Length: 276
Image 1 (cartoon, rainbow, N blue to C red):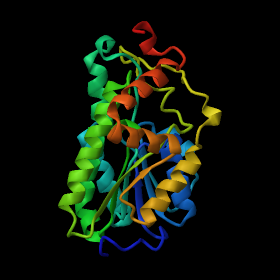
Image 2: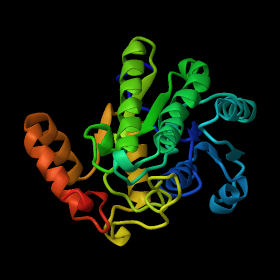
Image 3: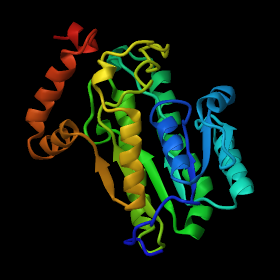
């Protein structure tokens, strides 16, 4: 399939999704199954994954920690054994953080890089032979933090910048192969990512600074992502706020600095408040 052509549908396509136990990953798996795809979903807790997703002959669930290279290799091997190929890989697994860099233990930044960046690299590496054969698609679920560094989230921003740089380079390498590479940047989406975000010492925060009920739903976000997959879009930046941040950062970065600072200063229990 030439790179400029669209995928007619996901029916009977093999869609691999990491971090599918909750949030966007769970919604992606449910929607892909509803569209007739064969879905392989991984998560660190197999029992939770199996209890979360609908039972289906078209579903493979697999216990994998994407920070572990061996787990990613085993996951892709299981997918190939069950379904015989891979058409779409969605690198969704990720964690966040909230703490000032000067207060944060370095192990926290390493954990975010291991999951958000290296998890994408490992899974993509072991899926690539099958994706090249199918002329399929590699997707990275990134963030506005992949375009614009966010205060109190240095490790998260770094991991998403790294993911996008990796995928952009890979996309360019694969221009003549028929393999498509894209990354998507949801705005603030109702999910569990903020509740399990790491604090300065790596413990789970267990709370969210946002009103989750007012955010884009994970199901809506998943629908936008899968539509982009079918249409083989290059990138997707969701929400007007997200698009504004990306463009302001390109055109007037100094103004963006102040706007971003003031925005995050106002969030409940902001780490920036001790510096203001």
